[in-house]
Every structure is written in C-alpha cells, then in structure tokens.
Image (cartoon, rainbow, N blue to C red; front, side):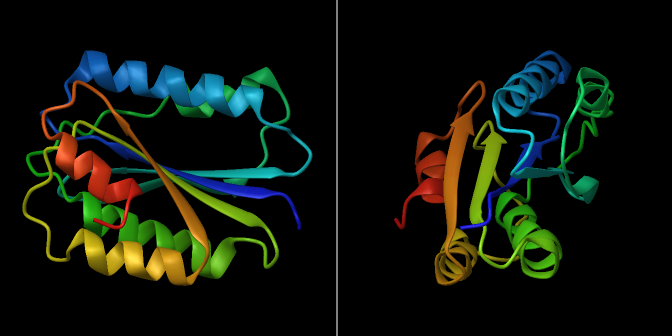
Length: 155
C-alpha cells in the first residue's frame, strides 16, 4: 500500500450555519494534524449549489499549512447537493489525482439536508465502492439521519 489519500467533502449550505461551518473546519484541522505527514495526502471540497475544490491532494507538514483549512470561506449556499459533491470528489480528485495503490477515504461532513441533487446516493456510492473508496459521514446539527447513513452505507 502507498499511504492514505483523504478527501473531505464539507457542506457549505445555508442550513449548516456559519458557527457550525467553523466547527467543521476546526474538526478537519484537528483530524489532519493527527494524521501522518509522510504518507497521507489531503484534498478538500466545499459544496452547496456549487462545488469549490478548496485544495487538491497535498501533504500538511507544518502548523502553518493548516491555516489553509481555517481560512476557507463559508459559501452559505441555497442548495445542498451532497451526492453531486461526492461524485465530484470521485471524478475530479480520486480518479485523476490519487495514488494508484493508496487507501482511499471520502469523509463527508453535512447536516444531512440534501436537496436539488441531479444524481442519487446509490449512483455515487456504487462508483466509490467500485474504486475501493471507503466512506465516512459525519453529521453536524443533524436533521436527516437517514441521509447521513446513505453516505456511509449501501442503503
């Protein structure tokens, strides 16, 4: 195996709220700082009605590198396209940029209120499974627990 490639997919929709968004970023920062700096690559995207790849796969070597995480600006978007964001992580980060033999982990942090999505969770989770991408979902101010479960499990 060749290290760990992690993509954080964070909900920037209005239903999350600015306070919870900051908490999400602090959590991501702490998690990144606890991972090995030698064999782990991190990417992060934020989503609402649009998807912003905040940074592509890279390593975090120093505490100042982590400032990039806390400086991410909250979208405060009007829609929540979680499945579309997951698909973007797979197609625009994992497929072209992850290392061939790395373990792949997709971490979605959301309040679960997905709407206006053009694709289903089953479509994107099927593709992730096919590529060996493990999924973890983390609820923030959770409103829709079933949606959170759909991200991590094959429901």
